[in-house]
Structures are given as C-alpha cells and as structure tokens.
Image 1 (spheres, rainbow, N blue to C red):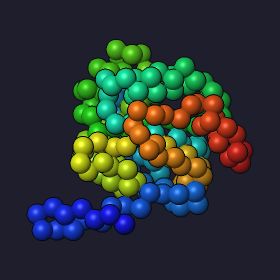
Image 2: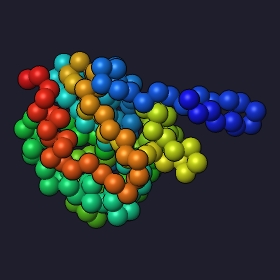
Image 3: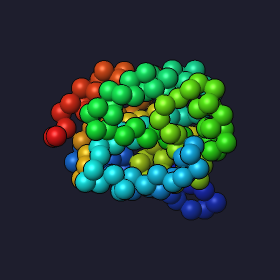
Length: 167
C-alpha cells in the first residue's frame, strides 16, 4: 500500500471498498443546503455514490448531464444517485443551476469522505472518478475507480449492475 508523508507523519490511504464490504458512512452538505447521510437510506433505498473530480470540467459536466438524462431510470430502480466532489456548496449550486442537473450534489470540501473511500488524489487534492453501488443494507455491491479521470462509466453499465441487486 502506498504511504504518504506529511510533516513527518505517515498516512496510510484507506482501502477502496469492494463488493461485500460495508460502505463507509458519511454526512455531507448538499446543494439544497441540507445534509445527506448514507446510512439514512438503509432499509429503504439503494444508493449510487459517485465521486467526480471537479465541477465545471468537461467530463464531469457530461457525466452529471448523463445522470440527469437517466434520472428516472435510476429512481424507478429504487436508486438514489449521490454525486460527490470536493467543490464548495456555492460552486456546486451554481454548476447545478447552469447545467440543470437533476440529482442534488454533495460537497466533500474537507475531503474526509473521499479519503474514507480511498479515492482522494492527494497530489491534486480532488477525488478520482469512482462509483460505489450500495445496497439497502449498506453493503457495496459493485465499485469501479477510473484509471483516468477523463473517462467515465456509461449509465447503461451502471444500470446493468443495478439490475443485479435484489428487489
């Protein structure tokens, strides 16, 4: 495992949750101004936790517009999409309004959630594009971390993974 050294301290990156692992819980402020807590969906909804690097960038814009286009497909499968970036809430809110993005966006401004999921790029200080499909019991059922942040999964691939979840 790679180690990062900061001011004489050695920081071990978190393990990236894999299928079968309990998803790390989080509470983040969203573009509504209200918090979203992963554990609040337990027993009720499946959740797609989708980390994206930065608002106002090409691939991220395409990805979030794609989530918006298929918003009803995710909802009809009982899945809440929670897109997360390190951007501040006001930036996310402006981006959401500009692109008319459907899902509420969550701000991981302190980077704690990206670190807990093992996807924080410590050199660039933003999250690597990654996806974690979490079932109603809070267990990761599918995950994917992009090798390059300019790449993204197609919704058809994500929806195929969602179709494998128990009803």
